[in-house]
Image 1 (cartoon, rainbow, N blue to C red):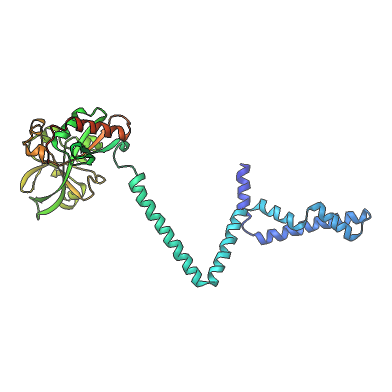
Image 2: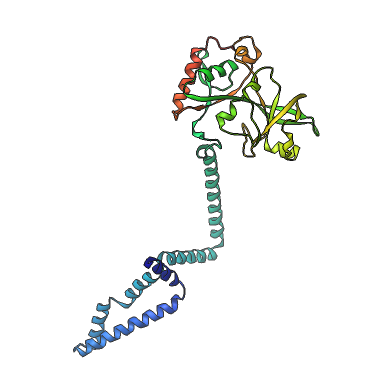
Length: 331
């Protein structure tokens, strides 16, 4: 409570300072005169009496400054004084003022831009649950001296990762494409993504309406299903919840809408407007001549089952690739 009163008094001391300074000087001069009179009565000359009185009080100017610091905020007064001096200097030199403002503006803008990029690329966490455990997997082909960096994987390698990577809690694959949407309104080309049913589990996301793909909908021959983005749902279907269960046409194929993703979900790129189930089976993926296993490029994401280091997960994925390299199709 005492500290609060002291701070209140200091803030109040910033206002009405000239009058407070005059009152303080008058009071100090009164004390000085009283000491001078005491010294004269003690037998000193007036000059010596004033000198001794000034020494005893410590000097009027020094004492005034000490009391002023106690009743106000010195750092605030110093900043205000420096700002006034800077403004007077800039007003006297318009050219220098313009150059200074321009330099400051460019420096602040550059720093803000760099921080924004660094934050989005390095610091900002991905908008998925426990995103620090998400990994983008790649592989290499040792026979042609490519140790890593290939992220377009066959179905065969996808199933090997899903079945044999013990350090991964889940594996999902997806591709990017464009499809023609028709069936209600004017036909249009929209950005799409083929995704395995495991993608929602790996990213730990759930549709805002309806559901994500079931495992059986990712098998070859299953009825085509689709999940819409929130933007497409709002733009083309006016946020109608009745769209769930309805049929739309994607590249002329009747496809049932089973869900709508949240407005914040933008994967793999922000302009993606529809997701369709990527279909394959382990049986078809094991055939070297199967178009699905040989020519189905996918980007694979994994979620580590524990907080392992990324090099450990990379070594695991590479060891699976190396041990099965003889059965992988050559492109």
